[in-house]
Image (cartoon, rainbow, N blue to C red; front, side, top):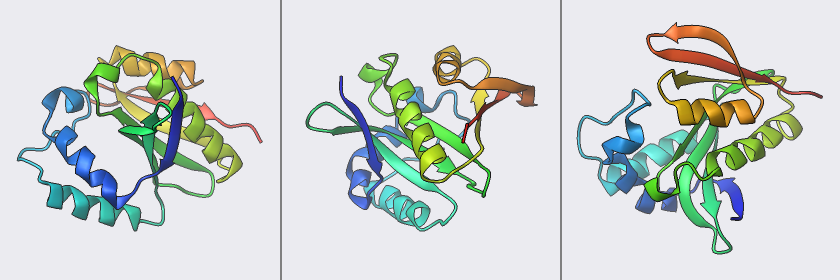
Length: 159
């Protein structure tokens, strides 16, 4: 399956707002919405995050038609590092290696375009599929309990 990433666009809100209402997608994130998310709310949110200078947000797309199926982003970008976030919004595509492939693409971007030295993330210690994904990408655990039920993982990028 062909996996690509492209810059997130305001029009992506037409799809992503639907994912916000699915508790299964957010069960390990700690950021489950406590109310229904409308298209307008999602569009406003996307406009806000795209304006942030210390973030790089991308859509994960699959297939020749480049179907939008999730998001991946770097936040808190500094001269040396950034925090990685990823989710697949289409549940039927979970555990297919898509997050791993997308993360590798974003890590290439972080290294080549942003020239970062490292990328880190926080993951729910119970989210074993995510931990496997990050391990396949070269992340290692640097803190066992970064916060309750969370691990901090980091990947050093080579120049």
